[in-house]
Length: 194
Image (cartoon, rainbow, N blue to C red; front, side, top):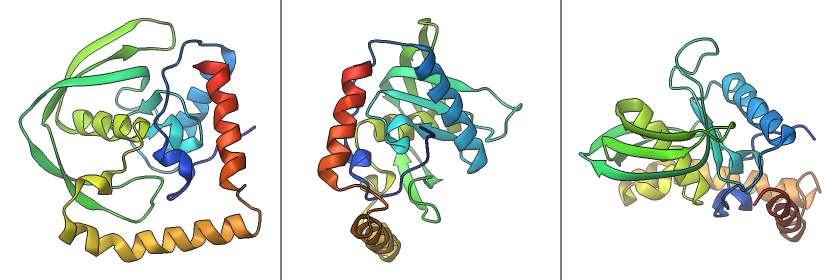
């Protein structure tokens, strides 16, 4: 099954992902496929639930270009020790074309594991810290526009409404399964990896 990026308001985007307890060849393939999708869509990060997988994994490369910068594949990420605060423009591959200023901590500590089971424990700052916070939010079912004020939200509400309309019409035509079937699919993935 080829992975593809799902768009808001797909219910998996609001699903709190569960920790991964098993890494196998298929999971490694999915991580590689996620990196491919991220680059193909000019992104700098992609969380597993953005490709309809309810597991705690994200990929990132702040350069946004294959072969440049540093690629990250992080399993079971946890962020803590927030320091400072700064606003920055954010968008999302699950709501293409919509952007807003989001205030986030300037520095955070990231803990987690790579695909080989090696521990990750790093202090991050600047753009990489923002990318990681955005992706971990996804794994918790939080979208970037949940973190903006009412006035900024009003500026993008028309765009969000269009995503709702498109999603409903795709479900009506059967292009996207009904929510009950989507929930069953998530349960199958959770059983396999969490």
